[in-house]
Length: 487
Image (cartoon, rainbow, N blue to C red; front, side, top):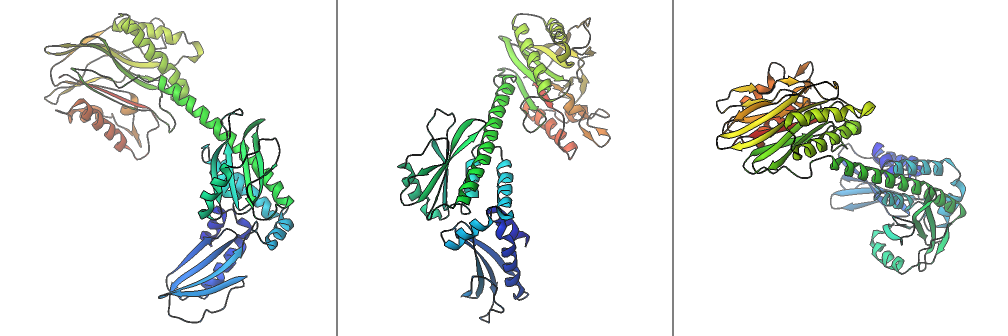
């Protein structure tokens, strides 16, 4: 019964659902206690249910109370079937049914279910398809939806549907030669021998397209009213989907502008970055990274974490990354860059959010890498020796955006060939499983000690997998991992 109800709902034939369930109950009531299949088929103007079972030729049993029914045999398969006529077909009986029930609960349920289906998607390309498949075959034999991105642009076909799929290509050719009305109200569409109407799709005073319907017989007044009502609902759903798509595209563009313009390229330096913002629709969050050249053989790197997640944190992320790049390329030392970034964040006033940052300069030498760095309230940076020894390489200083008088100083670090420097955000160290954190009892250092002789990419991926596997639930915090390995 649940399967039958779902089929009727999917076909927008909810008013026929009680009759469909009764027929299925009658048919399976005389079925032997053997496996059988229940199959529903849509034939445009009617639906047919079939109960297929393996059986010898025998009597049909008590026939169902249906307008048309029968039993057929194919090999050892017996199929019992019954049909239900659907309103909206070419017969006079269906027109009478429409006239009698257009204002009744059946059509009210149809409009309510249609509204739910239209409201269930925010994909502007899906809305025309949903419109067409709601309309056919309940209101018309075929439906064509035309849309335009802007009111001054010509209409283009968005979706075409026919109760007989074999007729879609011929109908498309016919409509290609048919002028589509562009008036403000319903209009007659001269499409061959079809009785056809066009309804404008207008929402919030903007014309979005045209809904075209066709059937063999004339349209009852009640069906025209239903189609016009459905067109208004469809237009609103289409406009909502377009507005959402536009806002999502603008959001993606703004977020991408906060990321480094390309993957870091560091010839002569083995490096890798992993970046995963929290949230399904976010490309940028409160964590950020950067790695960029200053001059030949010299790079600057940064990994930071803004308090919070989402757009507000991403705004501070953009301020920090652009400030770091600009000041570094102007020749400011690492500590001076951090100091000026602190002042810039404080200047944001109420929009300011505190920020932790690990910022440093890398210089390649014949004996490895010389690094000058500042850790402003950031999780500890770790160095891995080829021997497997892991040590902390930067002492914590004041975080940014809190104290105007904060004073920052550089620390120096040398990486011998094969040494690895790891910087992470608290999305790694504070990954939680119950009451435990990943970095409890030096958990991150133990993970890093297992990465001897691995490349920078392999180290970063090992840490990322460990974070994912530490707990079953997805992380609710942004995550960034920066790995540098001396060649």
